[in-house]
Amino acid sequence: MREPKKTEEKPAAVEEAQLIENIRKSMEKDQYYLLCQYAISIVEAKAKIIDEQLSMKYGREIMRSVSGRVKSPESIYAKLMRKELPADLETAGKKLNDLVGVRIVCLFLDDVYEIAEILKKQRDVTLVKEKDYIAKPKKNGYMSLHLIVDIPIYFGDNFQSKRVEIQIRTLAMDFWSVLEYQLMYKKNLSGAEKIGKELKNYSEEVANLDQKMMKLRNKIDKI
Ligand code: 0O2
Image 1 (cartoon, rainbow, N blue to C red):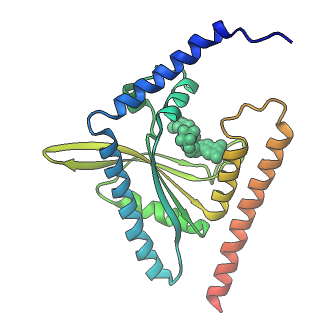
Image 2: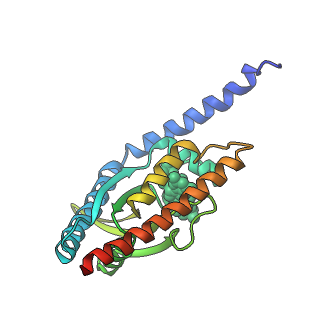
Image 3: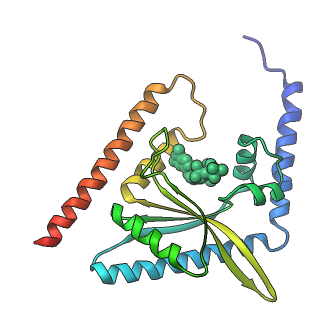
């Protein structure tokens, strides 16, 4: 077998590391992290209020978890490369919608849509895009409701609009998605069609289970 030519591979790796480092440095400027964290805190606070409101309305648990994250320099770089875009934070800010993300995991399928409707009605939430991967799952079976929203941040004399991707999904969808992420997502596994099909089948089982659990809950509620 031919040995990899180290001299040819090195510059690309060095250049990649440098580009990631440049993104990291840009993120350390202009209170980037602080503003992202504020956006996450605002969405988390909104989720908490909705959770309490719906818990009181239905007398049961609604949300299992709410978690936010700021996209890492490595992940920004990888996504810009996937989209064949220049690898810098300015481009990322203009072209990527998920630099700031909040994931809401709830118990039942209808909770997903009720939470989304309440969020969309809020005056300081501007809906940019809605992607319903539950009604229309991705080819690989991925299911989740994504709301891309703009949230105003008031900071000192400054006002900034921050874009946040809110992913809302059931516990069952989250289970599938977390495992698929570990096993397959972002991996270019050639010859893995069989595995892909198997995962897709499990995603359909998850969708069926969500429907069945919701019907069962409705039945129990009537007793
Ligand atoms: P990470 O590491 O989670 O940040 P767009 O340009 O908006 O049309 P984009 O941004 O790819 O396309 O949007 P999409 O498809 O809504 O995906 C946004 C995020 O949803 C992803 O971010 C993942 O977190 C999640 N996601 C999307 N597809 C899948 C999937 O097939 N499996 C799993 N497990 N998660 C998925 P990133 O940046 O890709 O990844």
